[in-house]
Length: 191
Ligand SMILES: C[S@@+](CC[C@H](N)C(=O)[O-])C[C@H]1O[C@@H](n2cnc3c(N)ncnc32)[C@H](O)[C@@H]1O
Figure (cartoon, helix red, strand yellow):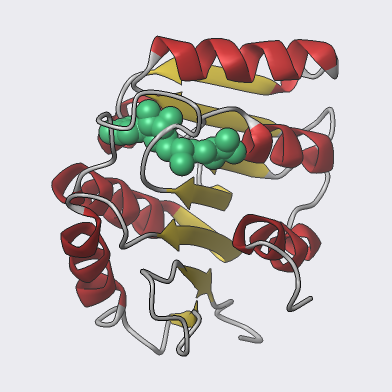
């Protein structure tokens, strides 16, 4: 587990929470890897909403889904994740956000603290009982430290009676370590 990249580790942990029929959201579709992962696991009865503000990212995600013949399980949304409430009416079982820029794309188009925070807040408020939101946060590029601090400030104040929040990072890494955050909504009955 400890040898895995941070994005693989997230999937390894979150996979057990995705069931046939789960409603999933990819807040940052990018090259479609997380969208594909959720579409595979949530099955024919599931639905994945995938947001991105770059046409290139939407196209890359569509291409990947087509290759795996799973495009029918996904609603691709060429718009900002801060508009989540406009597009997603259901409660959300699983949501993933991998912030920053599109790998192999324009590194100046990045997620921003204000819109990222808005998307995280909307997602948390729509999480189903036993639903999970995962966040991958970076600190190595322009604006990313502010984005990370803004989100962590909000996340650290979420009601602990209703949510379990967990944070994984590399405390001994000196060069801009990434971080994972999980937000799990407890069930009224059994936690
Ligand atoms: C690190 S990439 C995501 C990688 C992706 N999850 C994957 O599996 O390949 C970050 C993406 O966030 C997108 N992005 C930036 N601002 C956004 C916003 N307001 N709403 C939705 N996506 C945004 C970028 O265009 C970029 O494609």
